[in-house]
Length: 343
Image (cartoon, rainbow, N blue to C red):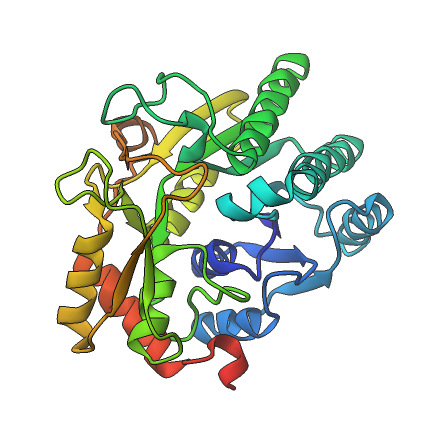
């Protein structure tokens, strides 16, 4: 199939491009490169020994998207499905700049869906998030858990989910797959692609990795007074390659299976911040200095998944464990101490 991947130069998008190419799909990437790097796509091609198409464009630019969809038709490579990763993704930043998040994540998705509708592209796989569950009343979290958010980032994901549910009800030919994944971590085993955050990392694993490689002096641990075994936040970390394979499974199993389908993608196991620090120090052989700071606005104590539905319907479950995540992250970071800018 010809697959349009928005945000394909980003962390999860680039790893998904690898899996799509390995499965024989044609990949067309649209990315404005506001928080990603074109070098990631060069490395995707190196890993797979296959070519992809790249358009530097913003999903909010309707005329640019229109031209891309039309060009694919002229080349007799009409787009069959869209995998949507493009958007802003930092919880803390979203509380400071909520309008930017609504503009990028909600308005951008609306523009993309309207262009898809024009060209009768009816399969949409959405990169959603466990943040749509807010502060969960019970654990593990399943797909029927209450939907509520504690920050603007999560709210934008929830709004787009609602948009997709309503569109699938209005259009009998439309297929929407909402993949609510938990905390992506790790990198490709080649060490060629990984998470390369702009500025200060918002996610735990790349922050620890930058401390280990000497790029940062210490890790800021936001809160040690949560109701968890060691007082620090607990999250369900899932390997980025497992997540990428989940998107390909969803595409394979549900393409043209109309309606709106929702799945959690997680391991079902939570690890605390300090457990992550200890594991990374052991595997890397590097000391991880950390300092306890105040809780961040919008953060919650614990979050981990029940992913039985994905296993039963998509034949997907996580294959890689915490050791794999840490080893792969350390390989990526030690080979690329400054990310893609290292080259």
